Image (tube, rainbow over all chains, first blue to last red):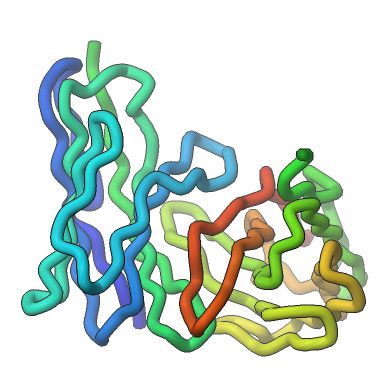
Length: 110
Length: 115
């Protein structure tokens, strides 16, 4: 079964709006990572947040982590057409394995 | 730096054929892994390695073999291809230390079709 489950599975918003994606997981983690995948391409790392951190920022990206609820969220502010992609969370379980969720497909409409 | 390279980009096999997907990285990363991604799905871990000479199974290892004779290379072998192995295969590498996996660098993928 998937360790990380993302919500929503698909999200469509207007350019300039903010996009929020959520990731829930089941067991304790070392860290949680977010990746972006443009259609047909390899994944690109966005942010890594450690289990003892609550929030991290990178440009227009903000990631939060709530270990008590076993959940994380990725916020993209002031979205652009180039943000259209699939976004995946991945959890490091401390067992030399990174487990990916099924992803959120984000579409930014002009 | 070339990063993570994968060859070939596309491959069509007949059922029962074998082949090797190549993966190489030039970042001196200890950790390398292979994932498969099926349509509309996330990535599932096939095999991984924490250093030369050390490999282990992931979530979906059946039908695949790996070896790691050098830090740079991590080939994935399909022993006897089956239609269920039609997928996009991604290789990734990263630093790994004190039991923590850091950001993964992904190759561009190999799109495999088995008929």
